[in-house]
Image (spheres, helix red, strand yellow):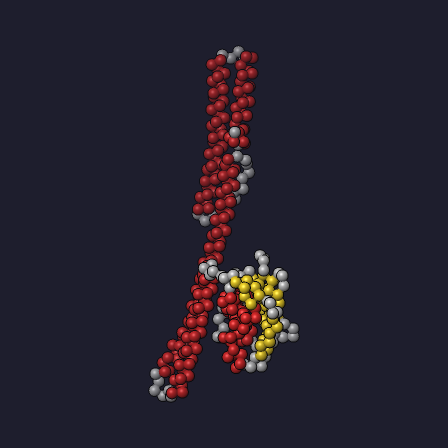
Length: 335
């Protein structure tokens, strides 16, 4: 009985029924021979069939024209049906498909633009240290260069190679995170041990700049996550704060644990973050106006990606009266 639910079929059957009733009623009054009114009924049925078939083919032709417009790139075609029936249902489904295709097309274009932009940024970031190395290498062969100069050139090249290695490693990590190929562990991570491990690679620079690190961490502060990736994230934020802390300054790390989340706050007493930089601070390759030439704009972006994929959030703001403050939260439930 699904066929009878179709409004178009209903209209055709009702029209045919009314026509047949009219012929049957009029036949005795007009003394029509049975053959004549049978012929009229058949002719009426044929006329109604041709009429509704013509309407259907007209609607199909219109729908076909709209699909052809889409195939030629015109996505503005309106598919909103103004009638009921099978074709209206088909039109509605095609409209949904068109919207979905348009969304996917826009998404693919955004991804393409993002990829092109990323390739340009990566090329620039890697090209910078390689250009410096290319300029230094010929100086090593100069006859007038003494042993001290050569040693300095070698140290410079070693530093640039280390920076390039770190840059490529960070980019590969970002690529793995973006493609979802990283399997994060879910083990208890003690925050105090995490902070100490993240500070270890920065110990020499902290000592050179005579920066004091103050910690105030709840004894039982912990969260469920991947220790190594978390060390990477917290270490990048600590490194950023250290780089913006003046010699003799102070880095402060606090951690609090509550039933909802484990919070880690990292702050410095540097110049703070420029207001125009705050909205873009965690964007990949973004460099603030106070960033030096050695800053690639990757560390904070990588930190945010790692934290987000562990059911966490990270935000930055300026302190009063000076300095910057980063707030990390690892939630204990879905957010």
